[in-house]
Length: 310
Image (cartoon, rainbow, N blue to C red; front, side):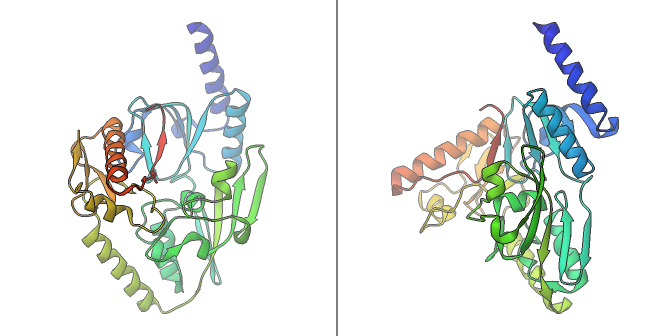
């Protein structure tokens, strides 16, 4: 049985090695190096495609060999199991981060950081993307989950999104057809992999754009626990409530479970305070959800995605 598994692993390795150069393929790669939580066991196979065609080819191999795969951006909204990840992790990151500007639009690959796109918009004198400057994620992930902050969301600026469908077809979807909702989209619902996106902005004054970005940066520094690893807002906003306020009112400010803690600065954030494991974070989230539901009858749902066995 073990020999059969080894043969299968070798076959997958050989097929992937025909697609991805050796320097962009790793084995038993610690996922804590690729998540903003700085938590997670090893990925069996970790590949970094450099083009849409490479992404499509890797996915085709995984599907034909019936090997599970997961697409990773900046790892900013993700909790990876301490046991690691079986199968193939496909990182759309620094190998796919090109940003181009033309007129009042910016087109960027999925791996481009939102901060980099916002800075490019500033350089071009384009306004409308300031809200995203401090979100610690990539453009691809932001399109999948309709990321937002300070009154802005991706749905406000997306012109179109180019995706890879599970059947291998590459589609370009207009923004109005993306079915954006609160932290979701058609990409999330149909398992599309975002390859690139075009955002439509408008002309503005560079000094005014920079002033807004500076103001939002200062507000984040003041109100968010940026000095600790975290995955951003841990829970979705319940209708009619604010998650952080419910957690605070439940008396959970600073509550700890292992190395994980409810931030004392912002109760909506769970932080990796002291060498937390994924089990610590999951246990803390469970305690928080149970306590809030017990006190207020509201069940907090996680915004952070989980990968691997818990």
